[in-house]
Length: 155
Image 1 (tube, rainbow, N blue to C red):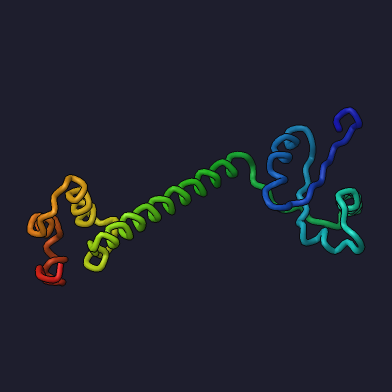
Image 2: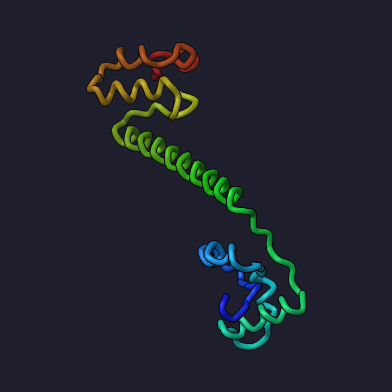
């Protein structure tokens, strides 16, 4: 495209498919990201060639606004934020899975603790992993307020 003196490039914002192309072209061209909803207004059968012609037409006539694309630093920060959210969701899923496994073994701790990520819950699970099965030993690991609110005989 450089050899043909292309200065501007327009593309449709479909899913995430535009992102790698954008990164390849962003240093050499003025890029325009067109909302796919706007492009659906083209009548007739759709094809990639017709879409490309339509994008070129609307860009030349300045009939379309560019979608906002943040700079590289902001994009990186957003990716980090999304990854942190994914990791947190994975942690919650693992904690829920551990609780489900314990419930299948007739150990129902989640009814008595406020959170399956609480210290008491983790202490009991770690003690079970170490092989401790005495209910008296396990009750000692649970926080006093939990025992007081539920009673020792129910736990």
